Image (cartoon, helix red, strand yellow):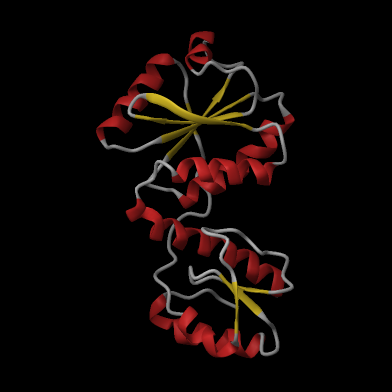
Length: 211
């Protein structure tokens, strides 16, 4: 099954109907539809899922263009001067930034990094994601973040560190906590854009799971 833009969404709706004629689906109102038995019951916004019938698929098919990245590589921060430049620019455009403080020897850090880069795609052009390898930068930079454990994921806005998540537990729980942290500082007008990007990512999972 191909994921098509809105202009040809009626084709997708027909394709989906033919392929999944007898399958029960769940929806969360973001235009995302998932088989009940797919294993991808994902909390995208308000955990408000509902079962939908095949006749509802036509309405669900009319979503907006799904263009955009599925992963965004985090840019490394090299020293305190570099951080100052990043913070100044972020303040100028009124945009929060996220910093992943990690180390190359930390297995949890390495495992979490690609998951954060996928999360970064959801907030592309809304929140800029950065990373710091604490063993490859001056310790003055590490002290700026007051880093005690790794991975530590911090959200900075208006030149200040606002909140942080210590990532010592399961990766999916860390990502959920980071997402909740980000959503406190992302303008509400951007929620539709975030929803659209999540829908694109998880439709890729749906297509793989049902093919």
